Length: 260
Image (cartoon, rainbow, N blue to C red; front, side):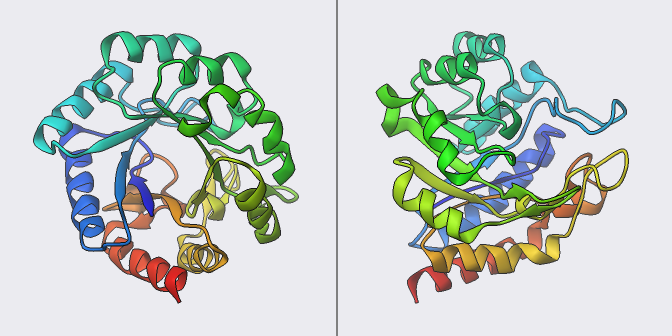
C-alpha cells in the first residue's frame, strides 16, 4: 500500500516538514503501508481566479524539499509539473529533491509533457482528467508503453453537471483491472466542488473517509490525500483537505476495509 499525502501548496519549509514528519510517523505504524510520499505543489497554476494564491515557486520549494530530505533521509517527495521547461529544470538542478513527477488532471493529455516527465526516469503520476471516461486512460497510457513500470494513474472522479464531481466505482473497478498501470484513488479531490465558491473551489471533507473506505473495499490499495494542520485557512483546496489529526483514523479505516 502506497500513501501520498501533504498540503496542496508548499507554504514554508517548517510547515511542510511538520506535515511530512507527522504523516511519515503515522504510516510507519502500519505494516500494510510500504511507502509514503510527501506531496506539495510549488505552483498552483490552475487556480479558479487570478487572485488565487499560487505557491512559493519552483526554486524555493525544491530547495526546501532538499532540506527536508536531509532532515528525513527516507523521505520521498512528489510535486506537479506543468511545462516541459519545468521538467527539464528539475532534472538539471533538483534531480535529488523530487522522486515523483505529477501531471495535473487538466494536462493529462499533453503528450510532450508526459514524454518529458517519463524521460527523466522518475515515477510519473498522471492524474486522470475529470472530463475523461475510465477507458479513455488507454489513450494516455499509449504514450507510456516504454515506461510502464514507472507510470501511475490517479483517479478523482468525473465532472457531473456544474461544480460537482462524482466517483464512479464501476469505472474505478474497470481501471483497476484494465488500465495496466498502478491505480491510485484521490480521496480528497474527489469531494472537491470546482469553482463552487465563485472565486475558488469548494468541497466537503466530511465525505473523504467514506469514499476512501469504499475504494479500499473495492480493492484499491494506494491513496492520495491532501492534509493540513489548519485546512480552513489553507491557501488552496482547504474545503476538501482533511485535518492532520484525522489522518491516522482514515488510514486505519482504509487498511481495515482492504483486508476484511
